[in-house]
Image (cartoon, rainbow over the protein chains, first blue to last red):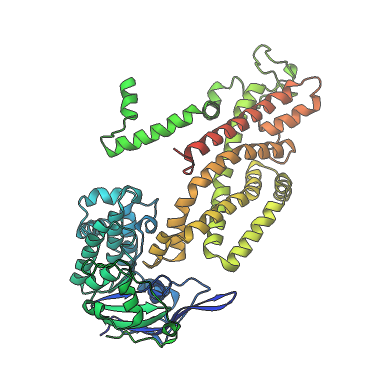
Length: 284
Length: 300
């Protein structure tokens, strides 16, 4: 069964000048795979991630023909039921660990908070589990980190802590919203590898939202390319460099490449027809 | 002594506790550099000591009347600060009065910020109509002059220290609610609140566990700066006969008694007046110093 099935998802925000459609009819499915969503700023990729968790803040509106997790429709769920879906079945790693960890709570308390509420296990058991999880994300001295505050951690450590925190309730789907864009290049690969390893081990589905084409093409199985709230193209990640759509080609051509040095990089020329074209289905 | 000092100001702490102590010591040094704040702290420590040891240091009972010795001047035998119109020793009354002052201040400082924190965070976090309604109620309370509103409450509830505490708390919470709301508005949009939300946390958990701890620092500073106002309000109510009941040695009530003969026996009203003045000033100085130390935005 598909872990996630999204059909005709729309997110819109009423503004003074009319309704702004951030996501305009996106459909895709996710199995036990690594799905990349790429696109420029404002293309609706983060909104898609948040809409799946129903975390779009009012006045934003989410509509869809169907959003189903393991066959279960979440659009009809109450807010209370939704709370047990968040974290337990779908989790999300946010962009910058500096802002996504509460500065006045110890790391250990933050990691265990959600778990201890839902799993109702003993304190010692929860603690053991958290330390195990910290070790799984390659933190060397988990005992010390468990007792520290977020400001005592480096960015890479913070993001690994975030991953530990999101994976401890063992969700089925992990959405990573630009998890490495706030990190140093040298740490990026490390964090992605840890995330990849854990996702593989647990048989989870991963949605990686990014604007880094190279990263996505080397890391994911399948890629959706979004433009102006729609999916313009979907392809296998290793075949991304053979993509057909002019927008994808434009994005690829505006990147410098080591094997094809050029004196001048191309500038993306936008065609209004792209945003009018119907969304491509991202079903695998 | 100097080795302990060196151990405390070292740049290379050897353990976690050491680092904590050192950081605490640095805060203390910064606070100590502010001489006036230190003076405030010393006065308040003395006040707490006096209140705690009142039965042992007071030379007389604060209630025992001696009509033969009424209105003795300052420095008379046995009565260092003189006696009032019923011959009660003013120094003893002053010492016992410090207990009442501290009692009122402590209770108000507990009730008002907690009430304000609750209203402010709920309004800020929930937003929408809840926010509008709660904040307009806060505005209404803010629109009343403080002492007048407290007066109305005491008049309705009856005189007495507990009712005075309640009345002062009712008038003191709105500023806390505003501060807490402002803090909440900036906190609730932050990523770590999104992070706990997408782990499935509900509104109650987010407010109590994630927003309250972050609001507390700014509230503490505000409390210390408010203390003087609370003391003055309590003394004002006592002066008007709406706070502590007459035999109890509340400073405001003592001034009210001394007022009748202020021209001939000026010290009866002046002595408690000076006490109120000193303690309010001490709280203000302390609050100022604490703000400098606790404010995370000041450059260190």
